[in-house]
Length: 345
Image 1 (cartoon, rainbow, N blue to C red):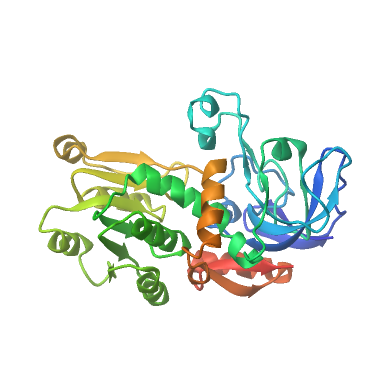
Image 2 (cartoon, rainbow, N blue to C red):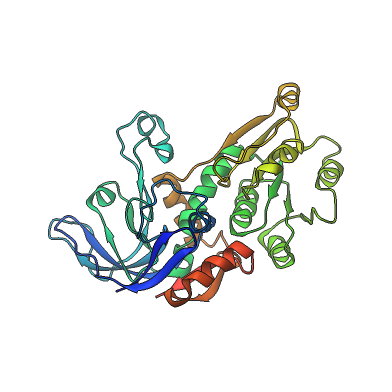
């Protein structure tokens, strides 16, 4: 089979490798569509290394069809259309036992400890099947839609951490695919006003189509001044950082009203610190929290929202890529040239 082999920072090449063999407790899936995540870009750049093995196959957003089923596997048949949750919780640690399986102390993941979706086929290990990480897709949900379920599930987790309520003012920093998922989820949660900060023109236009009430180019306007103007000088109820730029954390905190919440949703480069004003947090009683990954419940919610037509996935994706131009697909996401690059097999 063809597979994009990641050998180290900025080293990825298309190679012919053996199609994975499965045992009686595993499933082989023919990948139809995979997608490039911002995390894949950070791995490619060498900015994220945890769980990454040399000469491995990246890609944790994928959908496809069941190609072969192990003799001891039940519930799946050849030809089934499936989505794959990448994060595999141990279901036994302190965090799994206390409602935080997304932060499992022993979690493994497709595209990290196990080879991922930038290939023609993928082996679904027994531990993933036992945890329910292979999911049948509704008949009317296309692969191009289903591949968005995983990042959308992460955003559902972030939406929950941000505590968005009816009529809230929400500010989203970054209008890329993740930012526009947050726009749509904030509106579904009942937000009264959603303000997006975005530099790139085509993404700003998509943000309006996603439901944003106002899009600000921070290079041309003061985001702080506009947020204060739009909230009668109170500030936003919630701010979600959908881009991992450490230098923007303090500016984002300053957009909050008393008791507001800043959610650090995006991943940040390891070792790059932020300066933050503790007095603002203290006197304004604001909350700063983070979001990591998704729960299995979040994935099912995401798939249900997509199936019901509540999420416009076309706004979030850019087509036209195959494994043959995987490097271009990654670099285009890095540059913000399109949205989430979809790789068709």
